Image (cartoon, rainbow, N blue to C red; front, side, top):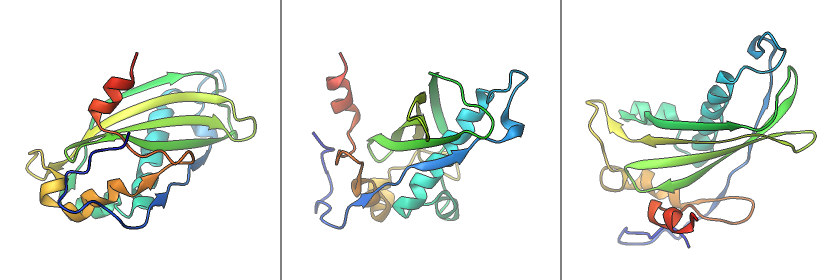
Length: 170
């Protein structure tokens, strides 16, 4: 089930297929054990999220120029297997929930060569004005809100709202 479109005229434009973000692990990101330090996964998630927003045509740079801020509300990361220096990972970032005020982004970090899952993560964000007050993109920037309804992934899945996600959980 997809997000209920509450705008007056539902989006009927072109849909955007999001390409995953590719990242090669660097030596400076390793710890004493020779593996990538866990804190770097959070940085990689930010890079992938910024890449996702760029592909949507709604870059962080453009947001800041419009005086829209999008702070992190929460972040979770489950580390499944190690990443070593010079490994290349594929980071699939997907907007899992969006309601105009908040969004949730889910990430799958896999090894490019083997396809092995390295980490599964999510981050939650809100939208604020420069004064730090929450804003609704649906009301204040409907042209930006529309961009969230143009996404689909490899499986053709659309983004979902919080209510639908709660219903799917066991």
